[in-house]
Image (cartoon, rainbow, N blue to C red; front, side, top):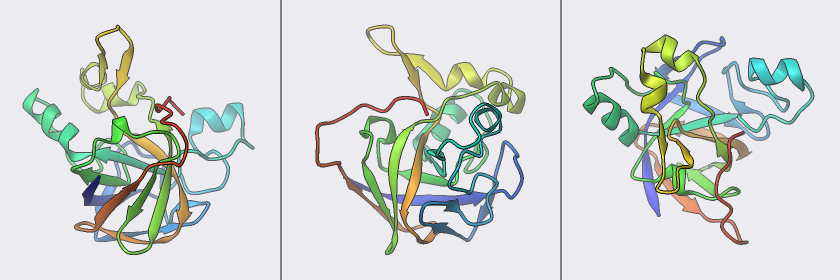
Length: 180
């Protein structure tokens, strides 16, 4: 499975949306250089208050551009970086990846998928009704979280729009993503 990077984004402050950039630099074990969520320990404000020394499993947030298309078709105004993602992808079903999947971004950078992003009330503050639009139910009634996936940086490097993404599944059995 392969795809491409559609856009890259970051914010030095804890803002909901992140500004698009020409490129971002991923730093191994830390995250996106210059982003408020960069660090070896948790930076998500809610989690940091509860467990400040916990490992940062949310160093890089990835979201599929296909979700933006779906949301625009439903009447929302969203684009790359608007929902806080660092890397907007195209052509990869991010939500179907297993825990531990590695994504090779461009020539150098590699991230390892840790889990699903848990949507929070900030999504409705950004645009009313958006929270319900990024949540769904499968045939068994289980919640589907569509607001992207989280990862950690295994190997650093620069990432740009237009870079190829190569998917490397983990060696063991498929472990479905859970919220992190």
